[in-house]
Length: 253
Image (tube, rainbow, N blue to C red; front, top):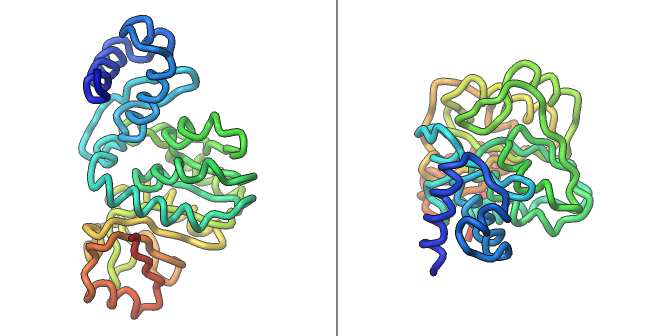
């Protein structure tokens, strides 16, 4: 049985029961626990289920704006951007990570870092890194947005403002030379603003499809951002337009 066949069976079982442990899946599907663990890791990285300690649970409400739906777009580009961004994290850094699907993909590249502290409002990031001994985790408290698998609200902002990070890694809905960083959601924009305000350096992870586009909620100016990480499909005029503002535009190979 190949991975795609196993994936269908695992997804069907988790969808039916809501959550299952590795050993429950192994018993139900007749697969070894080692195979189940490996497949759960890969499926979780696709944003199709939430990895838990000892098993997995289904992600409900797969709306267009949900974490899982966003995670399914431009996978290769996002992975390369995330790998590039992770290279800017040093041992012992304290970092903010938001609930963006590209930021989530940094997790796999952070696991070899030593002594880093991750402060995040993202439940998938928490689940992905919770078993990594070298990483200290701080989950922001507040109201759960079930579709985005993230924590938002006034309590969450107060939590962020009680910390200071060396670096913040954030996603964004739109970015342009004219209007800076913009977002669709007031909840997410307020969290992003708090991360920016309380970090020494700010890094935006954004695939080229969002560059040159604006949404209706202003988040920050480009002067508040140190670097933009994006993919090679960014056209030369837009890159120059952003670079001319003083923004460091870094393209993933």
